Every structure is written in C-alpha cells, then in structure tokens.
Length: 243
Image (cartoon, rainbow, N blue to C red; front, side, top):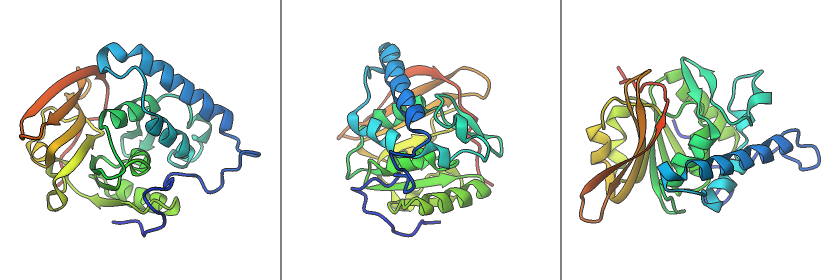
C-alpha cells in the first residue's frame, strides 16, 4: 500500500495542514513535550551517548501532528510523553523513544529506511520528514490500511507501506541505509541484518515480552562487519511473525 505522491521529501511531510499558530489548541502542549524530550535525552545520555538530539529530529517531532495518530478521544493526551494504545494490542510509542531511535539512525535526506512495525504511522511520518525514502511493514492488516490512509491524508509522499511479516523485511528494496524496529523480537532477525547496507545502522529493542528488553544499535561498517551495542532498558510490545 503506497500513499499517493503529495509532497516533496525535502518539505515537511508530517506538517498538519490545519495548523494555525493563532488557533492551534496543541501549541503549548507540543512545546512542553519538546522540552520534556530534550530533558530526558540529557538524563539518559550515559546509556545512549546522545545528550541532545539533532535539530532535524526535534523539528520533525514538532512538525508531525501526533494528535492525528491516536484513537478518537485520546487527542488531549497526544502530547504527553508516554505511549498510548492504538488498538489490536499495539501502542503509539512514547515521543522520547521515537526521537531517540530516530536520532540513533543518523539519517540524511538521502537515506533509504526500512521500518518494521508501522502501527498507526506516527514513527513513519517522523522518518519521512528526515529521509529520502521510507519502506514500512506492518503485520496487522487493519493497522497497515489505516496508516496508509492517514499518511496519504497528511501528504506523506515518500513512504511505502506493506502488510506483511516484519521478520522478512522488504528484500526486493534492500539494502537499506537504516532499519528501525518498533516491536521487540527475542533475537536479532537475520533477514533484517542481511538487508542492512554497508555502512548502515539498525535500531531495535531485543528481549522477551514482559521480561528484560534492551535497545540496541546494530552498525555495519563499510567492510561489512556488524557491531551490536546495547543502550538502555526499554519496554515494547512483542514482535510477532506474519502468517
């Protein structure tokens, strides 16, 4: 499922077309959220090595209208720094975690990114604001369909969505400069590591559901060698294979 072209990658693909600074009901909440994310980045720097996230990542977090990605009735909580349910046992990730994982990818406007776990499409929109191309795979068909419609409505034209098994990745579009996994497998998926470019970076949580999970950065150097580095403890929904 591919949203129709509606915007150049260099523009703000997540920008809310209805946002008017004079009547934006979320402006103050969004500003508080950005301050909280910046403060949490500084607090967790000993684990992540990132005392501050890049200006580009923070601008993307500010531009993407998170209230468009939550369930009806949850809009008032959209700019609180915590995850929220989106149905089907899934969640929209905490904004700090979205910012951290995105920052750890070291994206450029030319990056080709694979996202495993589209969910509601929020992380997809943040990636699309920073990268040249985003390929996103979602195992829950209803979520994939709704995310495609939502992103198309927001004019995100540089993201391609697919309903499928995230453990398989998107082999025909590989290799990818960056891979992000937004659910936790209990091991490092071999197919995803195989689809990582040289050089390239993958960010993913690894660990069993309701047990210890750790966020990892998997880096492949120009010679093709992989290095896995643990960052901080996290809690994600489990990554499940497609049928």
